[in-house]
Length: 105
Image (cartoon, rainbow, N blue to C red; front, side):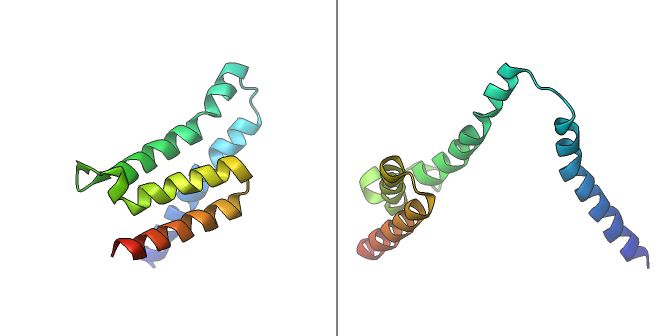
């Protein structure tokens, strides 16, 4: 029975941590500079996650011509820039990665 209360407490805590900021932000009027700054957070976080994954391997810089992931990411970025279709971009990126990975083996 004790474990059940732990699960309930963790569930309630998780729910409050996820809905609390949404509830609070819906009732506040945020300054325009803050909202402008906030629109830049997602691309910055995505770049911070992708850059090390694409440019480093085991702590060492990757040669661009020797990295299927980096080449596939560049192909997917060009596809997104040109077509502006997320599903097509994902398909192009996955396809390029699979093709380049098969060629590299």
